[in-house]
Structures are given as structure tokens and as C-alpha cells.
Length: 289
Image 1 (cartoon, rainbow, N blue to C red):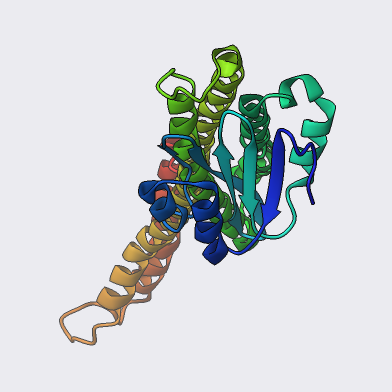
Image 2: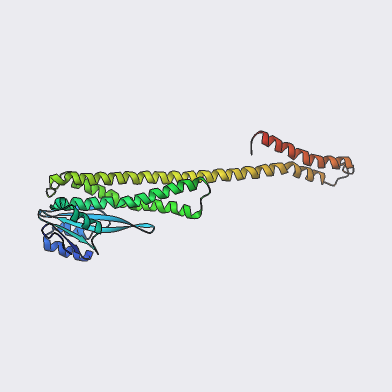
């Protein structure tokens, strides 16, 4: 499909064919080499007539982040978008709507950068909703499913960070004036995309801290619960200590011990009841349970 032939065109081809396309339009050796390298990260390579910008669009796929590669080849006259499969519909719609910005090659790059940075928002929103539910669940007794969801969210954030950080660095280099093919009037657009990526990066770190806090809270609740169980078991064990001693002492069968006397027998039975009750009252007075 070709849209707005005078300014931009997109080419759907396999990554193996990108190098041949680059040779046809006149990319230098470094750019041709980078087309086949680092496919899962954003980067930019300058050339004599072309500026090569590799973009990565994050997309949530189950329990991981799928990375869709989009390579932007920028010259003074046109922009070539290299991709596998269909071009992202959001990019096409944005290029059609913003005809004023899209009338310039750098404007097309700015639109692509804007769409790329916005792709992280739905993922971060879904993770933020999951964190809200996990915070409520972790205060009580969390299920195994919720524990798995917590680690799932941490993995999503880690995968998304691998996309956002290189994108942020690439947009920073595009907006700092080092590349002559970048028109100055579009630098604010690229800088705005950089700011958006920076905020996404900060939000990722914030959500990672929140997840760590949620996990720490859960572990603290579980530890307190376990300590409470051990305290109760210790109290029960302590209550039985005098009973065990008295039964052991009274059960010894020696002639010199006056156990033939029923008074001593009933005294031991009485002590086996009174002593644990007194101990229980002492524990209650000390608020140990």
C-alpha cells in the first residue's frame, strides 16, 4: 500500500529484504548493517542522504510484551517505513488526519514517534488497575492466582522498560539538534514524544516500587500470621509443661514415695488443673494472646 507518494510510503517486507531495499535507496554500510542488528531496540544511525530510525512498538500479548519493529528511513524529500505485515492502523490514521504535519518528512517521523510512545499507555493502565486489586487482596489472604498475577505484572513492567528506555534515548537524540535532516520546526513535537516516553519510564519505576511494596506487605502479613500461630502453639505447649511434669513425677513407682496415700493423688490431680488455669490467667493478663 502506498499513501501520499510525494512524502511517505510504507513497504511491507521481511527483515531479510530490508537490506536490499536499503541498498536500492542508497543507505551507507553502517545503516545497512544496523538494519539486521538489534531488532528489538530503538536506535538511530545518521547517513549522508538518509537518517535511519528503528522504532519498537510494544504490544501486550498474554503474559509478555510483544515487540513490533518499524524502521523509518528519512530523507529531505520522503520517508520510507519498513515493517513486517500490515502497518499499524494508528499510524495510518494519524498520518491521514494530520495532513499539515504529515506534509513534511520530519513531520511523518514526529507522528510515528508520537504513536510509538502512546502504545505504552494501555499497558500501564492495565497494570495500574491490577495493582489496585492486588493491594486490597494482599492485606488479607491472597490466593496463588493473585501471587502469580503479581509476578506477571512485574514481568510485564520489566519487558516494557526494555522498550521504553531505548525509545526515550532515541527520541532524545532526535530532538537535540544533532541531525541535519531533522527540521527545526518539528523538534518540539519530537521533544514532546521524548517527554511522554520519560513519563512512561518514571511511571514504570513507580509501579515497580508499588508492586514491591505490595509484595512486602503480603510477606509481612504472612509473617505476622505465622508468628501468631507459633505464639498460640507455644502457649499450648507451655500449659502442658506442668501437667507433663506432674504426671511424670506422680507416675514413678517407688516405695519411698507416699503415693499410696490418696491425699497426694488428689493433690496432684488438683495441681494439674489449677496450675494451667493460673498460667492461662497470667498470659491473658499480659495480653500474650
